[in-house]
Image 1: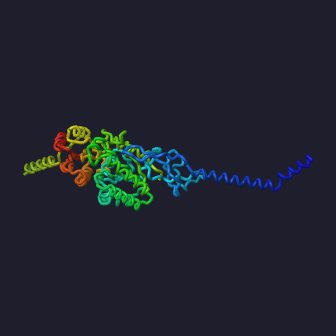
Image 2: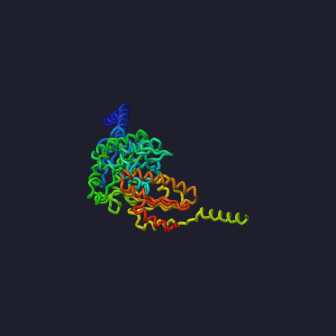
Length: 303
Length: 150
């Protein structure tokens, strides 16, 4: 009887049941693989963010609410996949990038070499001229005028190209560039309607995209003024600057440009330009310009 | 007749010598220091490298130079350039004339209170030296310069 039962048990584990077991194992392996791939798409590492307050207050970048459909550039900083473009990685195990959150300032990352700016154009007013003289990258191009504003960018023939004087927008069309850094707004603080300033700024971005649809566009926050200036001037004060920087941040999100909060790179603990950082309370000294440049080196996006 | 010819020749040589002028040598660092300390400028000026300054000036500066510029708060600036030869000096003069004209036009709408400094700017050539001085007190600056060139 014992021997017969043993014989019967052997028959139950051979043949068809073995095939079924093998099929089951294959199916399980496929399910596990698929789960692993799905987990890889949900990349952690985004930092919690906070609304921007006074100029100079650091705004930590927030993580995106969802994965999105068009991953382009990650604005995580510690994630090793931050430099990878979605769809371009040849590594089958690399996780697709989270979509960039344009509502947040460019986060801090490892400093780039100054060669990063060799294909950059800096557009700005007298403040950018000082930056150009004392700290700006030597390989970049500069399109500046001391009183330049978001409307005169289209009309002021202030850029020398060859033997001609062109407007900034016309000069861009004749310039090879991959990145544009804009800082405009100090001269517009007296405008009645910030919305008009924002609208013209938006046209500048549109014009840049016409000249180069692939350009990386950085909207630099307006630098703060000193506390003394801010307290004594009805126009050039940090409350007004904060308001305008808020408009720029919204514009960056709307136009999918990168808002780089250089103001926090030069501001003191109160969000003001240090008193010894400016002769007139508005224009930064060479040392402040160097801090500004240091901030730019550590707040870039992969192009 | 011979004596007349010799006298005329001597007179000609003298006139030629007078018209050519003496060669001027300026220690540009010393002149810059004296100007910066003279009180002629209202804003603190900072020394700028020639290649950087060229971006602002619209003229290439490729010679020994003392270049001091402000932060943009005023139109004040100081350039003392040792051009080295006549042609380079002339090129720099023409470029700086255009620069002053451009600055005047820009400041007229940006900071009209600075225009008088540009209108009174010292832009002079002394031998192969070119000096541009946009100062709050042009007379004080000229007095210092005169001490070096006369």
